[in-house]
Length: 365
Image (tube, rainbow, N blue to C red; front, side, top):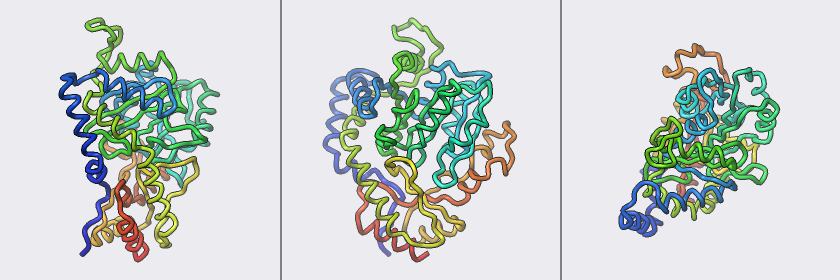
């Protein structure tokens, strides 16, 4: 049997750029400064510029990026935040950790992105923000979402954890909302070699507050203006990320080429391919749908092709949110997606032979 094709791996790009990554490591070790300092400042500045924003703030992870932003906006107890019905749980957890209540709104059944036509009905006098998730690397329709938010005087956060480098109407992910919140988890298109996150914004006041809250609520040592937490980007991860940022556009182009072959060559009436409606995706994940998802997954595994499910349980049915009392049937689109979605191999360094094999095996299902 041919060698197994993993669902995802970063090993190939790390091997390719090993020398630069080791040099970055050695520079941090030699500098003997492991939180903050020049590497963090440089990456924050470089990444903000890449996104097309004025300010960048590093933090511990993508969940914290969202939570710190909500707290900086003074959103908390008694407030509501609109989130998509279908996303990774961190989107809603951030709202809860800020002290507010997540209000789920159904997504577009074709793209799994927040449906702007459904937002207005969920807005109440307690609604303070909308979190738009750029799921799988495709941006949500930010012009329409921002228009709704502006009309109601509420904030917009972009959960851009899966969309580094994606574009919509010529603007990059993270540059549309009041803040753009990123995860640099190792498997992301721009991934650290450990946990890391960041926020970009054009709002100087928000940038200052986000940084302060993530640093114990202080700008001056032992002088604490705000109730803060410890969520800082460590220097080593910042150094690794600066190396990788130079190659992000190249890696995104490679993913688009893989997705282009999948879209053009996978032909199976049992398989529903992704629909692109909004801008230029970066294909963090390539997610198909199948009514027989579990059988398809088993078949692919038997044929040496790795897969994953993003995500098998909709948020309102997670036990963690049982207190919200949202029974099965509350969000049928999210429930259908959870029962049908399957992520197939998508990673930088895939060979043409590997792509062909994935296509051929799926066509024969």
